[in-house]
Amino acid sequence: MGSIVIYYFLFGRQHQSKEFLISKMVIYIILNIGVAIWSSLKNVNDETINGKKGQQQTISDLKPISLVGTVVIWYISIFGFGNNLDTLINPSVDSNIMGMCITGSLTISGFIWMVSAWYILLINIKKSDKTPEEKIRFYLDDNRTWNGGITGFMMCMAGGVMFIAVVSLYLDPTPPTNEFHITGWIFIILLFGIPGYLLVKVPKWFRKYAERFI
Image (tube, rainbow, N blue to C red; front, side):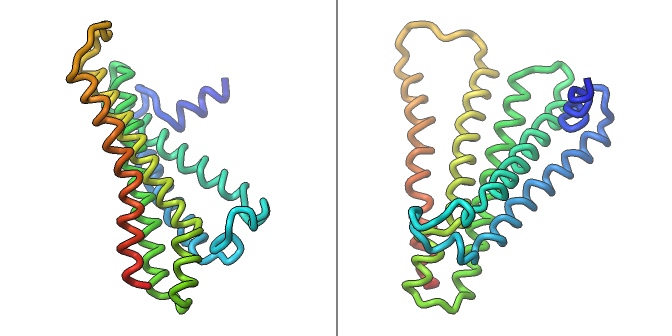
């Protein structure tokens, strides 16, 4: 029973006041952005985890407990914000609206993580007194903050695909038939093809831009 009470306290319920729901949403926003920035600042210049090949790293170097804690807090803040937003605007408990709130939160949060991580990485590249070869190896070839930005962008793209899928279900809740519709296949190809293309291209574009400062 106590766990259910804690769940509703964290993620919202219809009888909670608007002021309380909004206050929790603000806290979750601060947590989400704070974790993204803190993680990037903490890891960007860490000599024990950056600039190495994977096989040269030990479990203790990678700090798995810290990584898991960061990810858990980040996801709790996403679902906390999304569920409280759903409670605020969705008194009829429409699961599609809840899905849009959560997947939309994931999309925006992933984008924020990418921007904050790569911005911090770029600032440190500019300030670093390493040689150009060391900068490439340390900041762009194998860096936790560089990889964090890529992961954030992956979450952004995944959230965007799920958001569009939920919106489609909300606008057209009728179950699909077995009939072949060329427009439906084109939509599916674009829905997955564009994010797939961006997942490959955006890191390359940013890396090319960052190399200007090396």
